[in-house]
Image (tube, rainbow, N blue to C red; front, side, top):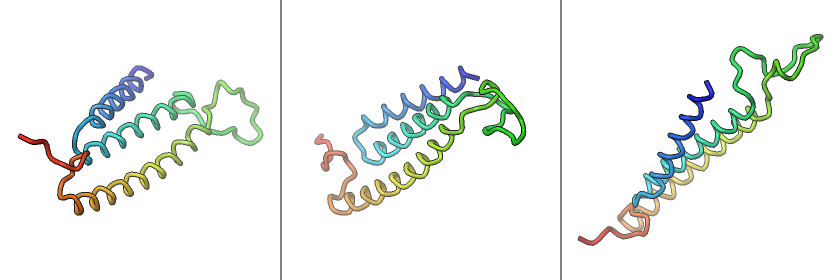
Length: 114
């Protein structure tokens, strides 16, 4: 399970960085979104990858920390998802406004000369 999550984080990070280096603003926004997904997955995996385990202790039950996952990374990821969605929406509005003002979606504001 850890190998699959590690590979997913690596692929998302690599794809996000590659898209960040592209000349179009939409590709940059998608790259930022992929990087945020990679970071969310990394934070989520720090809480422990245990399938079928409860996130919190049951009442009246004495348990050890080895049997449960940490709920703090789950709460952080939920917060990061909401903030990332709002940031992506804001960036898309700025992209549309910039395209309307400049007539292009190139990062530096002008097309490459041929």
